Amino acid sequence: MKKSYWLGCLMLVLSFGCSQKQVSKAPKNHKSAKPNVLLIYTDDVGYGDISAYGGKIATPNIDKLAEDGMLFTNAYATAATCTPSRYSLLTGEYAWRAKGRGVAPGDASALIKPGVETLPSVMQKAGYKTAVIGKWHLGLGGKEGPDWNGVLKPGPLEIGFDYSFIIPATGDRVPTVFVEDHHVVGLDPNDPIEVSYRKKVGERPTGKEHPEQLKMMWSHGHNHTIVNGVSRIGYMSGGESALWRDEDFAQTFVDKAKSFIIEESENPFFLYFSTHDIHVPRIANERFQGTTGFGPRGDVIAQLDWTVGELMKLLKENDMEENTMVIFSSDNGPVLDDGYEDEAKEKLNDHQPWGSLSGGKYSALEAGTRVPFIVKWPKGIKAGTISNALLCQVDMLGSMAGHFKVDYNQEQAVDTQNAWNTLVGKEKDGRYALVQEALFSNLAYVRQDGYKYIPGNKGPEMVPWGPKIETGFSKEDQLFDLKLDEEEKNDLSKEKPEVLQEMKNELEKIIKK
Image (cartoon, rainbow, N blue to C red):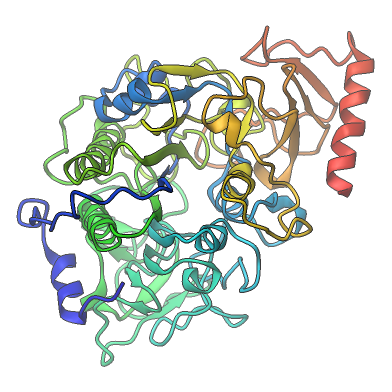
């Protein structure tokens, strides 16, 4: 999908108020035999953050997905941090199988190389038009890293996406620019970008040197280059005309998604819509600021819900709702203080982002990887269904390949399985087991029968920086029964050594696979 350079620039500077443009409608008679697939992949949204899962912050549009579809209570991301989860989701392979797939810096080279089997490449083989819109955080460019002033490849287009409009990493990392297909959007060649994660470049002030210039104070690690009144991780100079405004993320991504959906309305489409909400810095558009009473974290949850509502409205208005599979999930669990003083803890009130679970982002405990997972497909899924089946995001590739009868490289996508019948409610049990990855690539192993094994390791008991989150780490092996003990308070390793040994053997087999 190609847009003119100047139209792209214009869209980026429009605010929420003035960017509510009329999107052309798709032909009303379009009814593809294959379902469209809209994967809404959110950031740091916890198991208890959505009101359908018991959260106290209103999320009516996301709740409507559950009312009209199926809500999973036992679904998992593969990791308690973002890059590994995204890698596994797109490749069908656990990220921990090779080094270098941890949380990527903002200047990382492409982690998924051309030729690797991916979810979008499977969808292309099945006859789909594919796009990624939103947060990427899987690196860009070759071995030398991204060339911000030139052609940014390899990237999404080289691994199965027909169109790409992304932020390279996260909102709290430089460079603070959008990338469309292979180029930074709106870049003036006379003002080239320079990025460093090792030393200061350019003359832009930093949060450490000039806290008086900040509209949101940093708490730990986020005190480098200031852009839009927010200090980031890493240093950046140049690119003034290409800089984003955090407040406009949601509208910009929604507009791009609407354009893609309408433009590809004659074809079945696969859209990986990767929101920035609710990752730090949590800066909602002005229309949402102060609306929830839960501080900036609550406000970006409301903004996320609005985003979902806008996409659902578009599908309904264009007669696409009936045959579009909408999948809503998160890359890992919740965190409060993740680098900025945004009152996430102080204004938590009675909201419990982790729900009935323990831990959170970074943790081997359940709230690190057990996440909201909702699937709506009116043509294929009974409304108002709740599934307790064990489900893992790594199975997206195998499920789509299986359903659409597409061959894929099973030696590379070694961990994915065909869970299509679980996704649509025909299979009640789901996976036999799955592996969770926590901080420092420490693993845990969860089985369908509810037993969970956390191998002994040398990791810290608490996350060793700002967020006060239990890691679940111990020098000794641990065993829990999640069906009786969701909070993982009662270690059964001494009471059930035979179960512990069985799970150790099974995990070892998976690791050696």
